[in-house]
Structures are given as C-alpha cells and as structure tokens.
Image 1 (tube, rainbow, N blue to C red):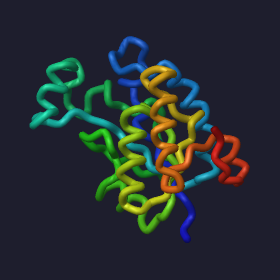
Image 2 (image 1 turned 120 degrees about the vertical axis):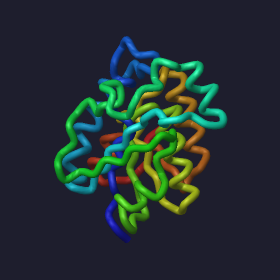
Image 3 (image 1 turned 90 degrees about the horizontal axis):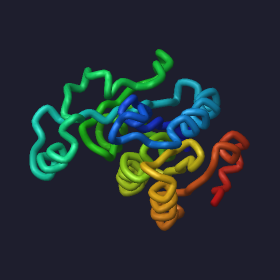
Length: 185
C-alpha cells in the first residue's frame, strides 16, 4: 500500500477573510493544524482551490445569484491560497465543491489513502471525502485541521462523515502525527 497524501482543501482568502460571506470562523485554527501536518507529508501534498465557473449552468445559476460577489474570474484575489504552497506541492483548481475527480486522482497517483484538512468542513471537505470514498479511497478527515461555516455545521459534517466508517475516519492532528491512525471523536 502506498503512503497517504495530505489534501489541503480550499485554504483561500474567500474563506479566511472575516469580511467574506463565506468566512469560516475557525479558519486560523485549521491553518495552524495544517502547518503542523505539512512536514509529515513532505512532497505528498496537494492544495485545492475552489473557483467560480466561467459560466454557471444548471443549479449553479441560482447559487451564484445568491452569492453574486463570488462570481469573479479564477485569478481574482478572493480565490488566492492564503499561503504559497511549497514548490513541490501540486495545486488542483476546480469549480466544484468536491475536489476528488480526475485532476486530484492524477495528482495523488495510485494512492489508497487521503488525509483531508481545510475548509469548509460542511461543504468542500465533506464533498471531497464522499467522492473519494465512493472511488474506493480511504479518507481520514483531520477534525482540528478543518473549519466549518460555524461550530455546529463543522460538528454536523464530522458526524455525517463518521457514519461512513471505515471508508471515512475522523481523526485529529495528534493522532496523525503520532502515526496511531486511531480516530479521535
């Protein structure tokens, strides 16, 4: 079995800026947890970015009517990663909540395990975890390296993902760093 990859989900200005409509209040706490995890994974790290589609279609039309300020080009500062990734890390940009798909699968190669951290627990982390698990990838979600739209939303998303055990496990930074793999609740 190959070693796991760390996927840092959407650590972008749009979620870290308190003035944003998509601000995740515990963004800085998640950022601190991610900083602790990065050295463990070395080059086996992928950062993801959410961007608005060039032309919304289907249900995305109504979505961006609700959030018109977010319908900006992918180069807009709103969608910039808050920390410049290490040059050895890959970046996957998608106009979807769930980042698991051909680009992330190609970036991580023949992996059978992902460790997810980032924002928002109740949207992009949840969507990515479910899509990866459906593809047969074991997913560990690092609860204290994630942040949701609110503490309640964060908790609900973690509880929902825990229902998918053993495909998805909820853990914490200490367990990942300690190599125990024992999920923490």
